[in-house]
Length: 68
Image (cartoon, rainbow, N blue to C red):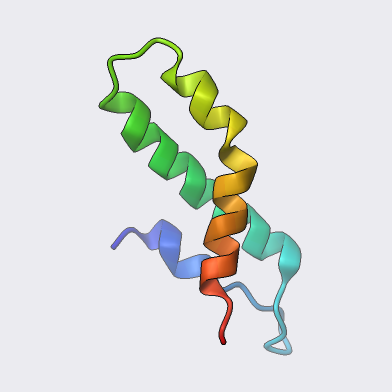
């Protein structure tokens, strides 16, 4: 697994969630996934489509990482 994904559960010095760091890591992970999808796409509009969904992808990644 990429080192990028190891930092998705970001915490501060007290072990509390660090929302800004977690969001940054989720966006980076989403961009990595978009890059993989666009690289393997033949559609010219695929990049714009995926970037329009970037925030949604990051939201889903953050939600999936919440401990239940």
